[in-house]
Length: 113
Length: 113
Image (tube, rainbow over all chains, first blue to last red; front, top):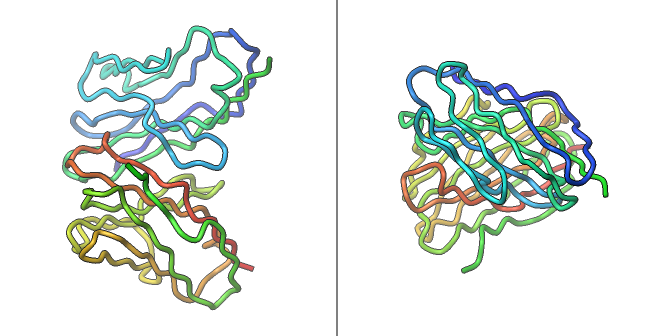
C-alpha cells in the first residue's frame, strides 16, 4: 500500500536558520505529493504541492522537489522565522483513491528568536 | 467565505457511550472527508462523502459511521466508545475532484474517559 515516512522530530532551530524536513514515500505509479502545515489549535493548511516528477512546489519561501528516482519530497526553507513554528505533514494521493490523503507522521518545528 | 466549521470543538465522553460530530463544509463544496489524528497513529482517513453518498472508506471498524445531508453538511458517529478513540477528528471539504483543494476545519477534540 501507499505510505509516507518523515524525519523524526521535533526540530528546533534559531531564527534565520536553514530548514530541511525529509520525506520519502512508497507508492505505485505517480502519486501527487503535498506538504501541509498545522498551526496550534488549527486544522491543516496546504503549503505546497507537486503532481509529477521533477516538479518543484513553492510557497511562502518553502520549496520541495518531486524526486521520482529517490521517491522523496523534502521540504526546505532558506531562512525560517518564529512564525514558521508548526507541525508539518508530508502527504500523497493517488487518483484512484480520490481525495484520500496518506500522511506522514508529522514533524514539529520550533523556531526560537 | 466561511471556512469549514466543526462542532463541538471539545467533547468528553465515557467508554461505551456514543458520540456525533458535525461538519459544515465551505459553501458550494459537495465533498466532505473525515480524518482521525492521534499522537500514535498520526492522521488516518476515515471516509469521504460526496452528494450524500459514501465514496471512499478507510480501515476503521463499523463503530465509525457517517452521513451527509442534502445541504452537504456531514456528521460522523462513533458508537460504543473506547479509550483509543480519543483523538482530534478533522473534517475537510472540497469542490473540485483534486486533493490539493482540500480545506480542513479546526477539528473536534474527543476525549474518552
